[in-house]
Length: 180
Length: 180
DNA sequence: GTCTATATGGTGATAGAC
DNA sequence: GTCTATCACCATATAGAC
Image 1: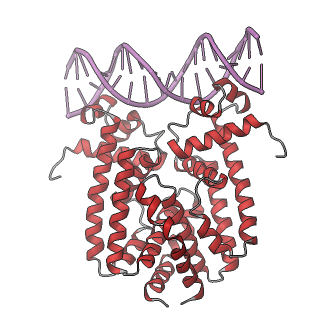
Image 2: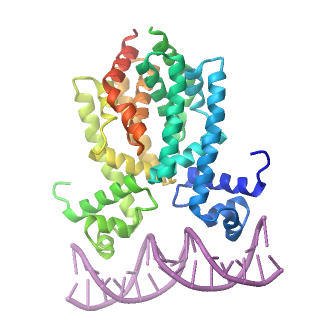
Image 3: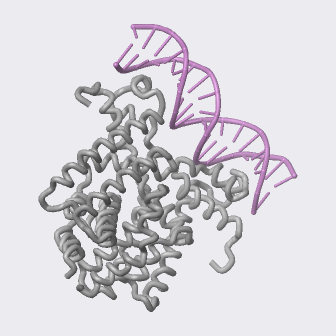
């Protein structure tokens, strides 16, 4: 990373944001260029094709994920609580890249599908270090996943229903872990 | 319903399948027509615009959902177990319509967003009839949601990891319900 | 490094034949 | 009810000016 050209990063970020907010259909090269503040030709100088742009988003996800795994394993609250809690955080870099790659995966983009597999496996592995019972660990992971998908959903119901009950949901996670 | 023209139904089904399998980008009028076995013009006789097609998919979801709620509340195993268990079933009519509307919602389609809110609220309401504790009910719903999103994911990891542990996950749901 | 201009093909929708 | 032909517009990508 060190000092990558500013324009490149702005373009990748714009593309990821477009994918999250408006979907693959709307995430055209021209719309991405406009959001990044460059022209179509300017964008295509940095990324020769749309596929190259997708690749950059995937790399952004993998890097943000690696940093997240470090924070997660170092977290005093424990991996599972960290995972479920941060599932309600939308707008972070990790979150935007994850959602963007998810959109690509959902339209059949193979490299994105593989990247998401790696990311999911990484999270579950860390939860299983803390929570020895395999099925409890999986259940906790599913709660976090469900929470994440609900939170990242556009509708008012999805946005409001679970996120405000986070503390209570974390209590249920504790119950699962401790067997009471 | 009784006896709706066969062609119309085949077209809606083709559009929903395209949305699920290939995403909004690939779900063009022409591709949908080809999958349904009609020409572009033939499709546009039944559905004057793409928006009309989207509306039909939403109606299909709401109807399949209504039927699902009936089965869910009549289910001897209980609403929550029914909900989590059926979250791993992919390929059903309900599943395809849900996923299709989800794709539309994720690209910002307002009517789809509203329909999904209704569907989610309907499921949670029924779970809460069985599971009195609000937060336990929400947790169970999240497990089902997480399971559903993992199962509907293209990658091999997502497909295999949780679905085969379904019985063990249902056991965790019981633990949450019964407080042990 | 960034722009404009342009080639080429896809995409939604209309008109009208059968 | 279904088709072909057609239109206007949009998307990706290239070429070349600055």
